[in-house]
Image (cartoon, rainbow, N blue to C red; front, side, top):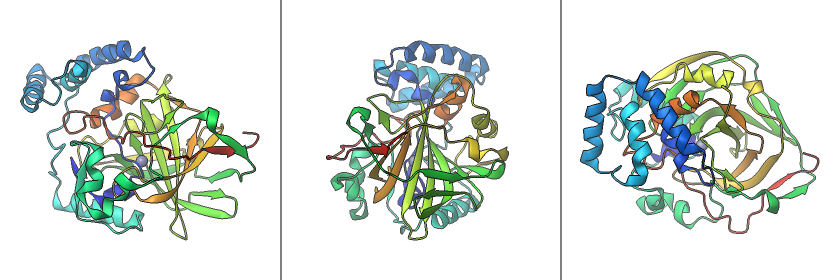
Length: 344
Ligand SMILES: [Zn+2]
């Protein structure tokens, strides 16, 4: 799937199809393959008719993108929960395109470029697509990263103070490269004397940031912007476990195709951020133009989500157009060391 860089900005980090997200993609997690098989069986039971699966299998064969043996789980997932044909090509209605364009403009101060990008042909090529994307290949503070907790240092840092609503209503939009919640105005994050407005949150599957070499099935990015236009992103990682009631509100209305939206009511934003140590570092947008100067805050405590919940996201960003999901691989730290607040 291809996107203009305007969308990239909206997605401080972009997402992928998670089921594929499946375990077999995670480093250091041997238990995932079995779970992937189990999940696949579940998906098959719930899947569309055999003819539909056969159609998708034939498409996979035609593209050859999933022909490698280690992609077998991905084929299972594809057969049980095939990606929609709209992936990889825009079949949006004009009004949907306009709506998304407006979203991008409203959420991002950065100028939108016309150059399209995708996950399909590898994220390593982004920097060569447009001079405006140069930071993607030449930047020294790129995101995501592998947070090595043993190398992080503590300091006297201001606490993160979230002023989120306990009951929010909003739309969840499928933007093609991610699913994004357009939260209402008035939710803020204060760090010291600086206040950021929450603009949106979106998902990546599997996770973009790693912690101590481990990747997780799902990552949520809360994107904030201050009056000086600087961005602060709070990253929350999901691991497999009990179902998350808040996440379920989104899963229940998850738009399946680019340009579609769902409506969420009574979402508790306040309960979204788990308590625990927060690793901070300077990074970038994880989609073109990969602009740097973004303040990253990766919450060490993980939220849990059930396999079906994780699968719901993974299915959206799998298939030949998302060979690695909707996530950018970890980038070099170039000497950066995360910090955390003393006492956390
Ligand atoms: Zn993101």
